[in-house]
Length: 395
Image (cartoon, rainbow, N blue to C red):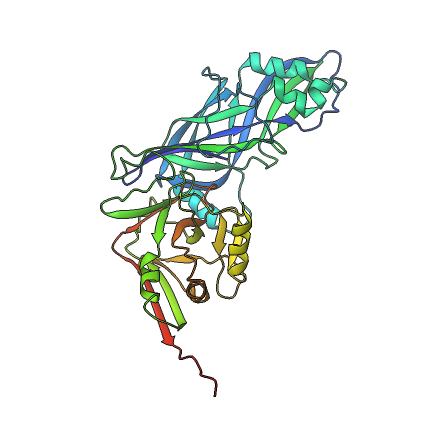
């Protein structure tokens, strides 16, 4: 999950809110007959993803009850609107050093445990405590439990960073404390096997993207192109000029194809994406999915050069071992990759056109971060080195 907010000079104010159901960690626990409620606490451990201000600053959070039942069979997106109780059931603040988080995120050693603890409203905690009963299916059966306790939302009330939360970590939990006689005990609630997602909001009104306020629409900023995880912002690549050129050549063998995205903003505070990839788009700017027989035929015709992944038809690297990606170079502030076999196949299949592709985030994945990349609109290059083949006539 992601929670927080920051202001980006190029992409405006970006905020993230975490929504999650919870369930008893062990629904068989029996309370003592003299058990009395003490308190309820929400604790979440950070996974060290941080985006925004590098220095140590204070982040403030508020916790709210979700008032709309979440269903497993429903799809929840980064812009899904979920009803919550506007009255907070808990507030907290944490002093977070973005530079330390970034160092730990890239470090392969065992991470330290850094967490934030939020004391929740006693009325909410008492309700949860009263529900604890291993003989009652309203408590033990999650389908009934989630009707009474629909979940919680963690919102950012103040801050300059978006931070990652490890919602499946053992140091992340909702815990009800109680005492039996002089002994303090606790019952844990966890976020595993439940609906969990993050919602992102972007206010671009003061940027060159101010006119981009609806999904699946083309928009051409004056100076740059952008890709941003979380907010579903991608750059559309139009290969029409490639098709126009190969139409003038009867037969070619592509010796090398290089795609370069230059003029990347090397900002330290708003670090670029590590890897970007390409996914096939339909004419309506949606990802091309395997919905019809023709889609399947198209997929097969690429001879293994396409891969159906979370972003649907991404094309794979020339050795077909992984999804094709373009890595960021700090030396020349650009992305580049060599999709040679892919462009040869586009030539082979030129009777049916595949002109539109989305440049998307590959590392970090689109829904797991708010990391962004800004690059020059005039420094996008496709270099094709080819040989002309001459058909052999039969004797």
